[in-house]
Length: 355
Image 1 (cartoon, one colour):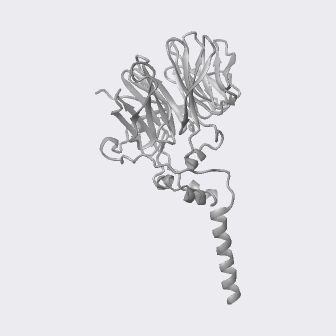
Image 2 (spheres, one colour):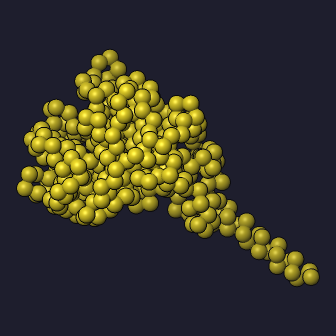
Image 3 (spheres, one colour):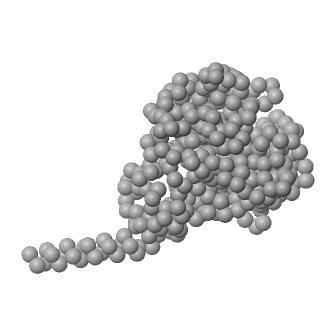
């Protein structure tokens, strides 16, 4: 019996040493997450997005972002690198080319180029013939690790996010570390000059310019905040909170008709968010089997939020069943919302109800 107890004590000691001190590659920091606003009141649960029409993408998975050209043709990029074109109903799909990477955010420039933030290739452009050209894949001696989303002003200046310098593959490690390394970069199509304008951000993702182009707002996905960066006026160069009372992790942002549309691909991991202030406990969890960590990932849920110019909620669209889930982008065209998703094999089309 004594030998059994000794063996148990020995195993417990080994387990404690392993959980507390076994080397891991991550370096968690302490940071308090913004408070969860709750799923009542302004964010009351509803099933509006259950009415989303799903149009399958014949070429593959993951239409992350959707854009439209002046001829009312639509475009998106897929996980396999394909850029596809389709009509307003999601039909007549055809592959125009392949980036060789993973296209994420995209916008049209005034010269007709489709500018693409490609996770693997950096900032690239596709011309009308389907030819690709790399605009920027490194800056100040550092690589563009995770080009994510972008906005382009009338003068051809591109603002784009490089979401992380640490975890371009396993992005969930950005949550576990809470160590900011993302940045926002400008690239001038005319002069080809680039500049880092913001850095040390918590996975900067969506970017959208105001109508007057005097500021842009951007999401910090794992910071769970949307911020405003002033480009003109007395506040030029300063950052303000646009909204940090969010029920989910913000992704791409677009602006249309006085509304900033924010895609929410996932609800918040409320069971483990309190651990953001406890880096040692997070490091202990990271030594457990991966199945334990996977159990904390929120279930599929569909959510799209629309905010006014002051960051106040205008639209609260949800589908708790997540029939079209992991929504990563929203494009408004008249009363239609075209929805992208990182994990669906189709695009979503939702019709806004008349107010």
